[in-house]
Image (cartoon, rainbow, N blue to C red; front, side, top):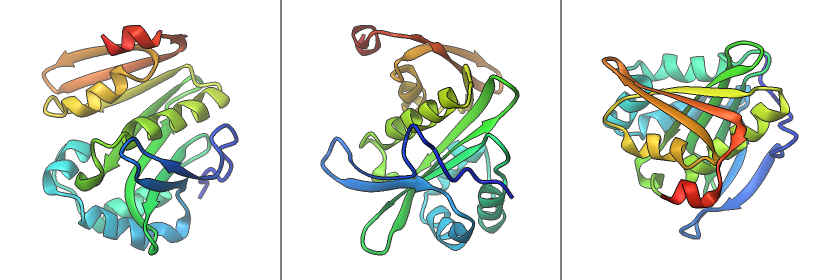
Amino acid sequence: MTIVRDIRPAGSSDLVTLRDGSQVQLRVLRDRDEAALRAFLAGVTPESLRRRFCGATDLARTATSLVSGCGAGDLALIAETGVTAEIVAHAASFRLGATRAEVAFLVTDEWQGRGLGSLLLTRLTEYAQFEGITTLVAEVLPGNPAMIAVFERCGHRVEVRWDTHGVQVEIDLATRVPAVARAA
């Protein structure tokens, strides 16, 4: 199994302060994190799991897949908090080809709205650019406007397409958008 161990632009482990003053430790997901990842998934509401995985999911199998599903050029990050290093978020980038990667996120409900999703997207973007990725893509359910907003504020040109299956998001990493345009 290949899980990226060195995310050079983002660092391999960082203590970061979120906009509400809370702190999380960001690091690369490791093989030995499967049990903690399973506990993380068990603590997420069914609605958040549905938004991330587009339906019901077997938590044990999903945890195994998230830990073992990374290949060359992929990156999986977790955010931990507290003395026990409880996982409160997972984000991943999966290479789709030479210049494209898909990104996906899951943040526990009590940690949503603190800027953690935006922070994770920034780290995945840094890594993607370092790896020569020029386009990030994501599939979002229509009932998840908060995730769409995270993408739209990422600082790059974003194209959002709605269809009968959901929302397709495409981020052009080669094109920066000024902060004033993002705030509008």
